Length: 206
Length: 415
Image 1 (cartoon, rainbow over the protein chains, first blue to last red):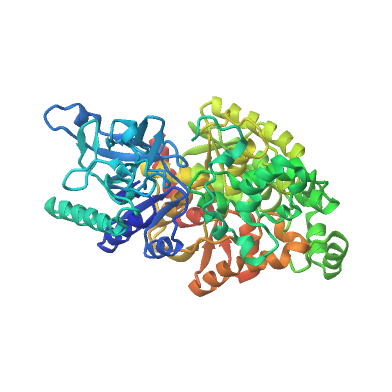
Image 2 (image 1 turned 90 degrees about the vertical axis):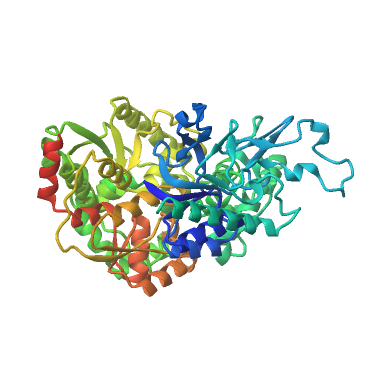
């Protein structure tokens, strides 16, 4: 099964990106691990022909490994994702949007001494010294709030140092983005991702 | 998930966000019901401390699984609720509950007497007795029994024709196909044969046990589970897919066996699938070919049953239906129909069952389709009774849309 875009995450930024991409005429599916916070936005999206995989989550990404091992290109390509519920049946797409949230949403997993991106194990921007993750002054801006995936100028994250050329991140999963820092960045980052995908498609003559 | 989880069903993962309460269809119509958060993980904490905290209202849970669907933290809320019912309520099912739950037994008794049973069940006097004595609501249209069981038909008419196919699948027909509606099973066999697959029954098949779980007959359900896991595991070890046409049977065997009954179902693995999903995957991959009828048209509405939503495979049914040229498929809003197996048959639940289903019924009436597509037999009873619209299994719809002879000819060459 192939889509133009698969959005991972049905929170505010994920649904904003999904709706805009669908309105632009693309075939879009949303993987919603736990139903969306807003039933209004998922219903609107589904009634307009969008597909939502309710209560499902990504089990693994199917990457084009040749791209990663290549010293020449230094880019990766995400070909498909497999989900927990559907199992061994890849859902393919030209583009993927990662909007999996941060700590509460589960997009970023924290354990003693390590901070990981939960879905694809993407490169995460994090202060190496655990003592600097937080400020002892509870009221001060907390450094850990900015932890998230590192992205290039087109909002594409890195995996093992190589940019994943068809994956885009928006919302709280991003480095430096948190509702507690600036809530408006949640939707703004989704708008940037939509614009970038539409531009890349236009450049490719799609 | 957390490494050192000490309790079952992930209850420690609950972060108290309460999204589940917003998705519970029972809470909307029954204020006395504590709701999934309070009945599930919150209540579990208290019950672990003192069994006196067990709330008898937990029996009103539909087991629709919408709370589990909504949970962003992967807590198996409904499983917690039903495990608590077994542990603390020690339910003693009434004669009515035992009869409603013992689908295999009732079916075996009723099928040979089907014309008499069906005529009798339709009589006002019988309904009055069932209502008054048994507390089975008289407003409910009771499902009809078939005079000839599906398995009897299969063994006589279909079985001899199956071995000629080089590719084989097994069929978990379930109680509904066997005793109430063998036509669906016949449609399944005809469709799979046309696509080039022979159909075999399992060595032994028992009711999946879902009705026993709701009636509190957990040990009886465990016995059935053991038989089914062994039979399906056997088919799986021969490399055969085991397909079902009822979404609830699949969910029960895949999720509830380990989640509620504590039965190890790892022998089933990926062997169990749903008919519509299997057919879609075979056609999409080119392993099976299909020829559609010229000029077939339909405007249908798809109701994804709660248990199909929980399985996460509704997308395959949707795509299979959309594959048919001439199919105009409308997605209904995600709602529970309210019957939830045997729940809606019980007199004390009838009115609530209809209230829960009301948004779905309104939605169907507003869309006014030619028919409704749905994989669940009890949703079918509920929707047909409450809206007057006919409900069809996707297998039957797809079979109707294809040119059977032309399809079979295409697949003979593939074999």
